Image (cartoon, rainbow, N blue to C red; front, top):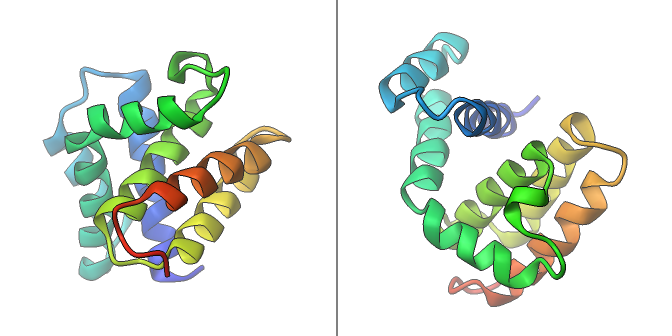
Length: 137
């Protein structure tokens, strides 16, 4: 597994963890990331994704809510919701090409989500990518 892919996977797992256990603080998450990823660059990327998603979560949730027709974030599966948050953050706040972000998040949805998660996540991320303030790449 590529270094960035592994970092994305761990960032998603940490977002899921905090979503389910809101009392877990950032310092604990940082230590968990550093314990699981020995490569410093990889752990920095995972932390950047996690911390950035949490920092911009309100804006991200608002964006997702506007494009997810007939779905509220609370109704979404926890895995799908956090994959969308992670993907939206990387689409809007990182220089990763949109196609790479979407492909990576779809692969995580296939691995961790339900049977239809990958198509659900793909549809919403495609809409978000079209509205991203970054240039489409």
